[in-house]
Length: 346
Image (cartoon, rainbow, N blue to C red; front, side, top):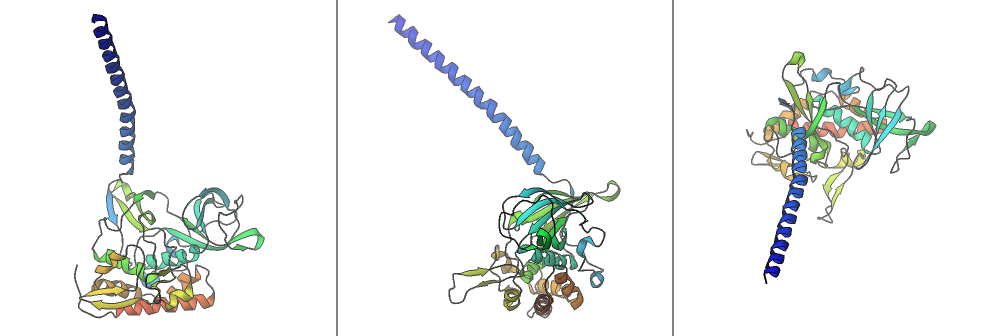
């Protein structure tokens, strides 16, 4: 019996030792994982800076919408464009490339390239933060692989209508921002941003398309955190419910004819403007006041027909498409500027 009791004690001791060892092993594994997560979270925290979504465009009537926010000085050097890497995922084919001067660009191929080029120019025109982009009608990219989906080609084995995107030196991507949790939610400027999304028919409102860029302050002063909608490719198409089949939502992108015949403003009730908008984050559009619609409409009204047309000419639309799209945008601007009903302060 004593032998059996001793045997049991030995087994219990061994079990306790094994459990202790296992616990130490788990702690050893968990602690580095926790530290790694903490490090990752710290890395995600943006630097201190002043949040900026919109800045008053005091020179709006003089802004060059053909060259856009980058102007002449930031245009890509097309003497030589070289493929570097592929960005997987997303609707469009996107490649990292370098131009003849060695500058890095993100090249977007496919249906979204034209729409995004024009949309960025209209957003920039009225003061919203944007990235810099240009549309190259026929881009020759050395070392380019076969695209993962069909894209239009042009002469000399080139790629048709390629959007080149970059940002100024020193501007750093520090994360994404949420449509419902941001420093501007329910402000006039945020309401104006939503109106712009409806005006463009940009239906793909998701967080991964929203970026925050940190820009250092001059002379070591306080920097800025610029909030941007960086993917506007799902614009200038159709965003409506198919009347015969009410559950079916029809959406496309970069279709001038569909955009021109798509309805825009539905009505005004209780000081709120209702849009014919069935894109993502649709509930955000339930609380847009008349004053916000008029505010952004009045800003857009300062654009000349030439400026609006230049936004689409920069995106290499045909003359007929430029006429169609410009006319549709002007009609929407007029609707906003003259929207009726009582004004409502947020």
